[in-house]
Amino acid sequence: MATHERETGLITPYGGRLVNLVVSAADRAALIEKAKCLPSVQISARSMCDLELLAVGAFSPLDRFLTEKDYRSVLANMRLADGVLFPIPLTLPVESADGLEIGRELVLRSPTNEMLAVMRLDGVYPWDLEEEATTVLGTTDSRHPLVSEMHTWGRWCLSGPLTVLNLPRHRDLPDLRKTPAEVRSMLVAMGRKNVVAYQPRHPMHRAHEAFTKEAALQIDGSLLIHPVVGFTGHGEDVENYTRIRCYKTLIENYYDSGRTVLNVIPLAVRMAGPRAGLWHGIINRNYGVNHLIVGRDPHSLSVGSLKTAFYDSRDVQQLFLQLESEIGVRMIRHKEMVYLPQSKQYEESGSVARGMDEYIRVSATTVIEDSLFRGTQLPEWFTHPEISQILSDANPPKNRQGFCVWLTGLPSSGKSTIAETLLPMLMAKGRKVTFLDGDVVRTHLTKGLGFGKEDRTTNILRVGFVASEVVRHEGVAICALISPYAHARDQARAMVGRERFIEVFVDTPVSLCEQRDVKGMYTQAKKGEIKGFTGVDDVYEPPRSPDLCINTASMTPDGSARMIIGELVQRGFIAQERRREPKGLPVGAAA
Image (tube, rainbow, N blue to C red; front, side, top):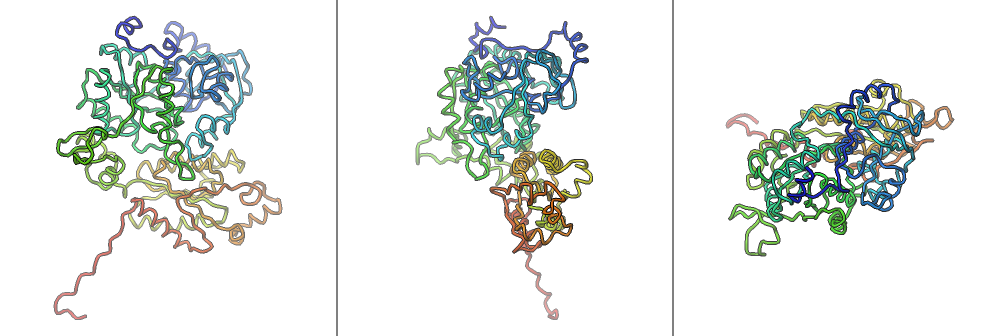
């Protein structure tokens, strides 16, 4: 295939060759038998995604998780120790390295204990959360989903040569999960040396269609639509299956099959702004791409705790432009497309003469809010009818979607009382509600957990997981927990989905909490009879920018619950009730 690639001019992989870590068929059976007797380490869902892409060469020239020397260099300089540009630290964190010996082999297993790979351990080293978050993400704000997730990572990183026994099993989208080598073969068969990739995070509409087609024609190349379906760590606005159905329907019906490839990539995203933009360029090069459509901030999130952006909207494009010659992938700026009603087509906004043509500036968020979430079909000028139907089927109106109300505050601040008042109000409006109370879940869901920081974090994340499932199935979750740590609350927010998580800070003075404490816990804690009690000898990290702040010293439970209802109405999760005028009395009836 390499010779054919040179003949057609398809760009070589980053570093010159595609790495392949998968054991040969001839050696597989013997290595599996050997692995059964080796010590094991269970890795996370994120690390499993990383391992899969390492194995098939998507991270070429990397052939292992980073050594300590490479890791330190990537943090400081965005380069491996040998000088090769690689902006994201690809590490394998584990909780404990006890019992692991340098030079010995061990088995890497999936979260469900399936055998994945054999590693010969060459290095074990510590990492620092604040250092990595600051240098790679530019923030330690736990509203960034990767920062909040990093609080749950193990404190040691492993590295060493890998032999992959089994790639992770995917029961979904098998026909769209091609390796870099397979995608390269498809692109070579199309006969064009240039390839432009587009990695959409959301369903594509007609503006995206117009721009991607124009980009492919501009370079006389093939087009790779390359959405990410790996581990995100944060709730998706539109879940993967709906997104992929949209892409597949769009491409099968409206794109040239002779120059377009749809492939999904099981990448664990980092949302690291400029660094992530470069990283995606390198990864796509390994799939045969030499041009990448880069939006203003496609690899970051909107805002942090203080409602400010994590990255300047131009940072991704600027860094990519500086280093595009080094990674061998040229950037195509994602330009604004506007709709011209008279000609019924899309054009770049810069090409539309000012004042000469009537046009519609497209805001996907606004169109979707105005149509889809209000129970009406998306307009045909915005998206094709087939796509509109898929989205309509998958997305009920906003007032039928799930959401989570998360009440946090000191012990005895009034969280449960407010929740118990809110619950019947929501049920009276026809919503199905699950109430997850901190005291109750500890008798069932999290029974056996202690009150140290690690166990408290686990408690919050378990409740967050249950809440995310309730919300995903269009239910309402009310969670009333102390939840003292900001990073754990923010990880729960990420699991549920930022737009569906309403954080309510029950901001009650500690003196009033003490008065309300019918269990006498504050008194016992002050006497030293209870250790690690939040508000006395253990920390409570108040939310920096909660969605609502309620002071129960001046507001009743009923008033507090109605305040939450008002917020839900404003967000569209509850329909605004319209009062009917009473019908007049029949003529001649007595008043």
